[in-house]
Amino acid sequence: MKYLLAVLLVGTSYLLYAYGDNPTNISNNSGISQVPKIAIDTSGNMHVVWTDFSSRSAEFLYSHWNGVEWSEPTNTGLLEVWVTHDPSITLIPAMVIDASANIHMVWQDFPLTGNHEIFYSRWNSTDWSTPVNISNTAGRSTFPAISVDTSGKLHVIWADLSPGQSELLYNQWDGEHWSKPVTISTNFGEQDSSVSAIAVDASGNPHVVWTDNNQGQFEIFYSRWNGTGWSNAVNISNNAGESHIPAIAVDASGHPHVIWNDDTHGNYDIFYSRWDGINWSNAVNISNTAEISSLPAMVIDASEKVYVVWMDSTPGDFDIFYSRWDGTSWSSSVNISNTDGRSRFPKIASNASGNLHVVWDDDTSGNYDIFYRELP
Image (tube, rainbow, N blue to C red):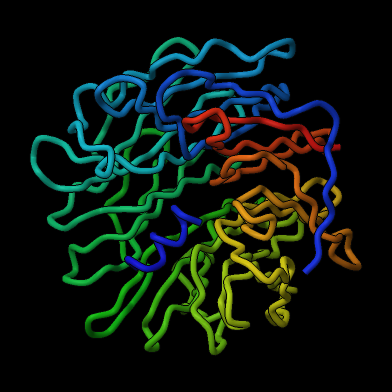
């Protein structure tokens, strides 16, 4: 995974097109702001959190769109007690919003106990709750992801070294208690289950994908909770290349759609596959550029159109690219950041009207800031 992470942090045709106004800088400070996450509440208001190094230690900053403007970023205060001052230790937050507009966040942290754990906090429109250690295992817990179902239950996954190797663990909040973590992946020997993603269908069943080298190279595996147990893990990439960093979304029919980066063609591209209720579709290369395409994110709107964003080095430096599936074909890739700096870590969300909202970090100003753009 060391090579993969190096690729992420450094780094054939496409369309160069600007949507509407220029992207909005919503962090706009002198420090390093990076790795944003976006979620939209039922009123259509956008909420963004990111990791910020404007002060001596890492912080999670938060801003929201109130229908008129972005709020001044505020420090959540969640890391002031729990984090050490090493920026490499506190990693990417994950966030969801429930039907009551409560924000739920999980992250990897390094508390005074000296072990990487997964922590959780909730924003109730007034305060952030005291962080709770929801992994609390003997091994290192990393790369959390979170989803929420229609009943308000939270579903969290992460990679954990407690079994003696990296396995995928799952935990659930039922409204009163966190369950005991259970293992979803079932590796044998010194294997790796790592970066993962989770989505919940209309019936409240979680669908999970993760990166795993169980079969000798990194592939994308999938499993689903069927109400009584987790299904057997299925290799849905299953090709000659290395497959990493999946994202997942579930449509109204309960069918999962999965994207990931894959170097089968000699450089990393963004691949896509969908479960139709019987079979997984053949993987489709939706970026298909000559350079590095990485860190994909996706969303499905109410009409079941699929929208994907990723970072791509085709322009010479990383920019944010976008493509959509209209039910028949994928559109040509569009450069939606198009800056002189490096644009990274995109995330995308859709509101009830089908409007698309994208955030990413960008160092055009000389330090990384968080940028936002709406797509039609």
